[in-house]
Length: 192
Image (tube, rainbow, N blue to C red; front, side, top):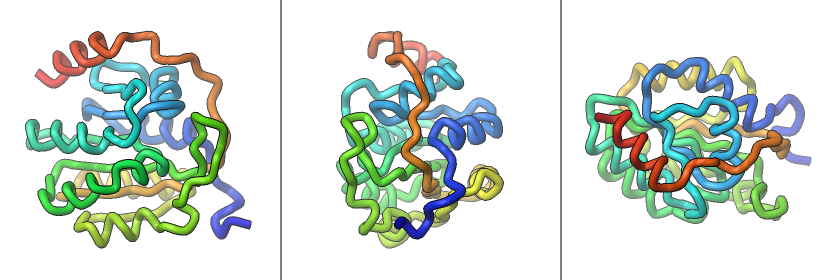
């Protein structure tokens, strides 16, 4: 039995809670079901959806944060994506963008490909982020805690890392209906 099993919410529920707190922050969403769910729940031009490329959402978010230092940049990531691109954690920690908030939805499985186990059950990604140099690191599972910590991170200098333990429930959501070119074009316009 997982130590945090019990009152965990779905990724869609956690995402909805975060979107309810946000204003105009750009959000880079990792590939697979997270992008599909974000598109269904709260599509907007300031969302950048990864289509097919795994493990690079944080790297793209880092680039946006460095290019737009006056705006908080939020990355919605999954445990499998973070494990795929672990080197980005070190790069974020070394460059220390104050406006970077890395939200990781951790359900301990690769949900988009059949719920194979990830290593996040044994590798504490929050501890890895802290060791890599993230300034604010929190691990939560309850809605009230994730909203509180996210609001705090919006007011603090980062980089910040918010790991949200979630269950494996997936929101029924179609694929993102925008082409990668259209996603990039409207995102660029939203940042201008």
